Image (cartoon, rainbow over all chains, first blue to last red; front, side, top):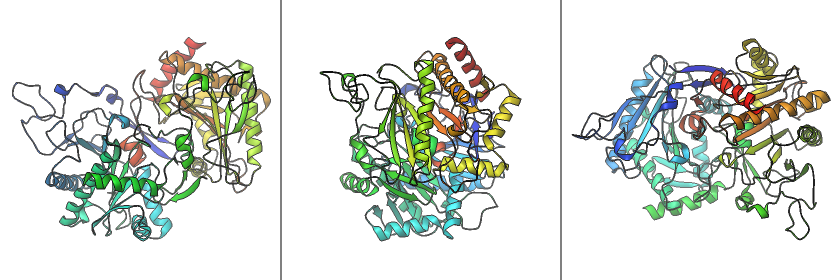
Length: 306
Length: 306
């Protein structure tokens, strides 16, 4: 169903998933396909009257076996919840679900990169408001994964480890440091309120984490999103992107360093940061907000949300 | 005023232009800073009662000498005009202005890449509706320029020339071919209605074009935008990006091939293509529209606009 084409000028694959044009688009609340199926109500994607976390194949997939995977991860059966509003245990359980899916998909020969992400808010194109994330199993190594491996090669070591050392040394962009997990606005953030959350110890993927590290990660991710929501006293739109080791055999052992990147499109409470001429045509981000100022604002947001 | 920081994970420069946060944002029509200064009216950026094309330094620059340049190119003194609505001679004059600015900026030691572009429509973040474009003189080689040079190296020749040959051979994505200039939806378009307009002969930059080629280019660009506007019978938002040879000494002679890329954010008449999880976090575009279908629709639009 979907088709891959190599874009020569950009040196990257483009995916055509033409059946998605008709996908469910902001349905009425009582027709949410991610809600539980209640007696007498419409049959949803989830034939259960109640659930905690559910994973299933996307009905409008960008990728399908045997050429990749596209899954939906529903965080809760509560339509009006959000990732930040989940109980702490549920967020920790979600980390286990992520780990489980990463392990399963990494074993497939047709999956070279497992990418877990969440789009939140109509500002980033969300078509279903029920709290959920997605997982893509790319049948190729996507550009950002290649850039991260290239950064390791350029630095002669783990680039995220070097970034974490710098953030700890500078200190002024750090938001959370519980000894296991660090959250910070990176030194050269591309988005005004970009935040990275990383394991302090080198962990190539979720598979390498100790259970307490996974718990700490779930906690930190929730704290970041609560801080976002507090920053402008409104639900904060974002893309949450889980970066970890590629799942091809061809990568050097230990390549990749589990970290989560948040890309929020807001530059003020009511103005969006658009990707326009410079970002799209030249590939260079131009930001109105210094990372240190963003970090100061977000630390206040985190304090208010605590 | 602006600051550059190297983003290690992405391998690219990020620009912080913090004074731009307060830049003029969708002013009332009678306070347009790009309109002429009329007797008794407010003084605008342009102290003239009438003009054809005006270029001046951006008051809210991303780059400033001696570390790059940021200029504004106003196409007309008619506030409600558009690039497509300019007279044919004005569009051709604009090509001469582009050439002139490319030549001037290319002589500066602090400019490594001259990038001419237009953002059109609130959907791509336009803050002033008066018809205008911009020119950035990057003090570094931006990522997309590097990718195009890498494509040349990978193919062992000019990548845009190879692309043009393929489009001519396939034929089904070609929109305009007047013998000198070719317009087409590229084989691996990233945006649903992406269009490239290129000189058929190898021309590294505007400086290498014959006068009749520049005229043909202006005509083709206007035809493309008129076709866009006809496609969904509405003003079509886009980023128009002029790609040409870098202006550093370090590039191989002949590197670069003048072409203009249009990135429109619409995927239907009223739905936007968002850059979300896959595009932002993995770098992979997922499109709902096959390039051949987009080309068929756009050919109809061009015919209606003719």
